[in-house]
Length: 118
Image 1 (cartoon, rainbow, N blue to C red):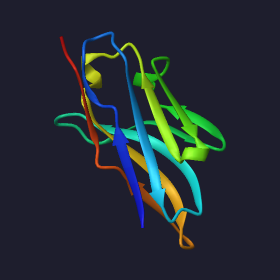
Image 2 (cartoon, rainbow, N blue to C red):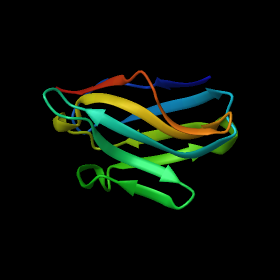
Image 3 (cartoon, rainbow, N blue to C red):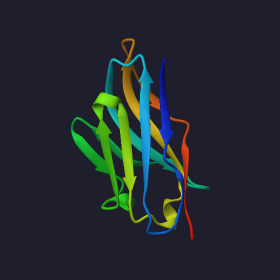
């Protein structure tokens, strides 16, 4: 059993910053990649950023403002969000591609709300 637990969402004013965290726990043999997605009201879920052994990738709307990082010792991924805009308002979901019990599967966190508003 693998679990992803997110934290760090909340309400912030435009131009502000937030840092999201996602910790993976359970029977983990290998974490192949970790990333963040978001779903804004009335829109489909979209990729925000991803990190793996090959590096990082960001969606165009967040390039230069968001930074994804990973602490392998803690099985944790972070998303530092700076210069937040109202259009960043969404539920943010952690995703991890994990090998557990000889099976490689995607896992999802429960989601954390980020609201950017004055």
